[in-house]
Length: 428
Image (cartoon, rainbow, N blue to C red; front, top):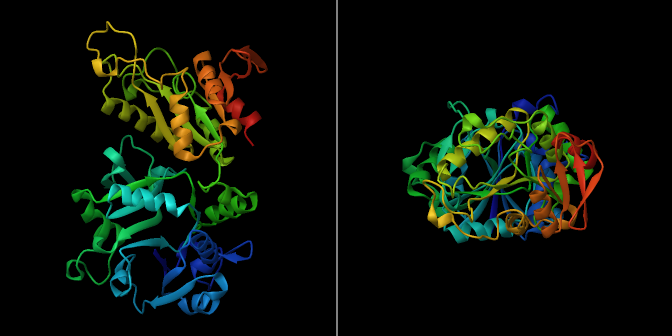
């Protein structure tokens, strides 16, 4: 597979980091952003690279040359006038059927084999690496439906009430025929507006949700964070070819206040300190994954769409505090019958309802999680039982607890009065 790196931006927001240098050449620990990108691509067997350059592009050419010193073959297309984020694609004669398209100002370390397998399994015209971030309110968001198909592109200026925290991370896999005919777009083409958005109605765009490290370093604040993450080894450790650490989180009574079942977004209220605890989990490099029993589905009290809206409110409220969850796994089943309006198809003794470990095991398979290095945190011994069955360290979160541990099923269960206190004391 060929990779095209869009390295022609001027990077005005990054001017305070380094002047008179193209943004993709800004060094982190003595190494340019583009060099980190080439290292990752080479590890994935992607060595045919085209860099689209513009502002101070000669410096990029001088640094990388033909790419031999970096284990790649590098060619260049020079924009004499800005062509937008996609216009140069029409100037490249040797694009393959599937090619990677990468923003030149991001640091990433991902397992492309997983993303490419997803792309081909879905039969996608365009696959976007997507993830939650710590600032969703000022980001464009992806709205997805069944099988991760993108159904809508929510611009950052668009009004929004609740939302799924899912953003395009800047790494794409495109089919060559995903590009509209040249005559259908202006000379200066925008990737989002002119290429991706027109594909959405036909169902050709998919979001590949990944927990791997992909971050723009183009502002002074993000530059400092990325630099710190590199020095801590966090960038490399998040590659899904390596085992991950996670904190599995019960929802009701752990993240949000529990006073009976939550049946609408209006009934969902975060527990004080829960967002701050999840933010600490995010910053430490653990995956924060919600594992929740939701028998309200089987009981006919909430629809799947209604539950999704509740979870959108959770993600929106967490996002306001700079926190996020990587994913949400829920069990809709309930084995007992006799409820008015109940849904028969969900009345089953499943393998996912806690204290059974099915949801945890599915999350572990999806994200290559080392369960022995992970925690299951919840407000009931049912949660602890699921964690024990899955091989995690069980944690009991109850306001009345003051620390220490209790014994359950022959295992020690750590006790904390809040999610924040657990994260503060245990997550490093």
